[in-house]
Image (cartoon, rainbow, N blue to C red):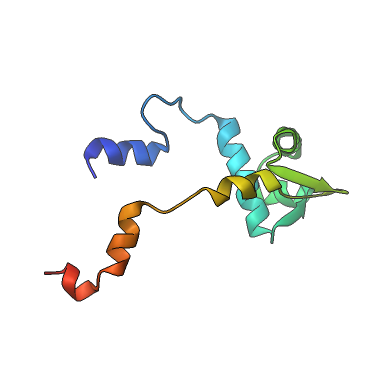
Length: 109
């Protein structure tokens, strides 16, 4: 990995992309909080897990609802089916499978 690659990875963006906004970080924090809360949680629980104000969490959740990233059942939220569909196309880096299939003793030579 080059110095530039490490810098891009650390910032979490690719070439030509815009810097992540607080809203982006907040949305990912909410999704991660849902994961940590067992996949489903209420507004107060999510806000506490993210250390964000309830009003901000509510606004972000409403935006995530619109795109299917979260679903609401009563007063509880959970990760939405759209994220599941997106996750289905993720695959590890092709080189990872090759490296994992090579015995460690052979790779060290």
